[in-house]
Length: 318
Image 1: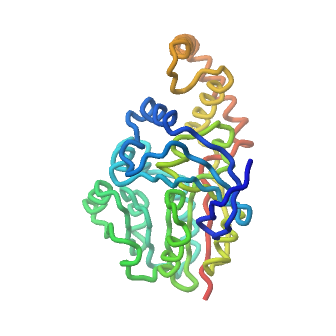
Image 2: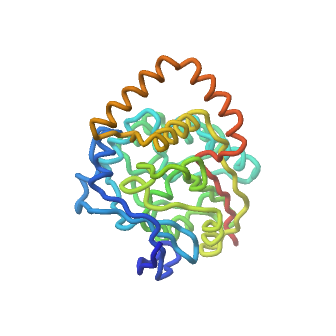
Image 3: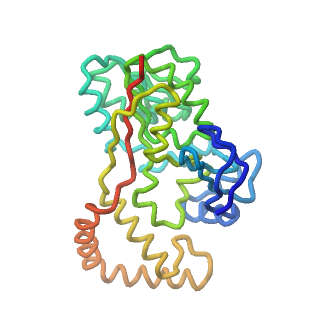
């Protein structure tokens, strides 16, 4: 781990630690095998490598270069049925926290996607959504939701509550973004942020394609959110962590087996392809026993292994 001169995009600390580096050509092959396309091919400038840094002042982890995907990238990746889930743990957790404050009447969702949270909140609150994905906004408008693709600076606030689910980690300049977001939260109002938990079940993976550019730009921990609160005039009310889901435990088991056996999830060599085929054949023959063993292991691990998402609740001062 080395010290570099990359400034933190949140607190502006001038120095940072370099944690990992990845070859983009190798990542591009993994993307093509896993998702069917090379996302780096559409970038204005294709990087040769990606480096993960950590700020020593606020613990934020961030990627350089911040080679983020554009609307075309999200239009392609969001076609996967799992991308915009209609029933997510953070939706229920946020609605529970909103319901605990009877004075809340208006709610803004930043990054509303296909409107699944708006669907659940619209019967109780006056909801507004903002997103940059044209296809997702069409779906929201067809449902009758008030949504816009305009920048945050064009929105008329303030709102009693602002929520964003799995959005902040996509923003390469969180300082400017959060400064704009703050003015949209009424004094005494609520801000709810849900992001991937860097200490969740992903922590044991060598790397996760969706947790790095061109998809994710940053990683957030609870200590970082405490600094965020002080910097933008909020009080940190509380945090919650998603329990481990069975589908995510299956991913965890598959990834751990692949790492231990030396067989890549996206194999390229002839030897790796043959080993993967043999694994699949043995797995198919032993599927009933494997499913039972996985289910029994899940019952134990879900009490020890954190889930995918953390949710943080703030109250704006004033």
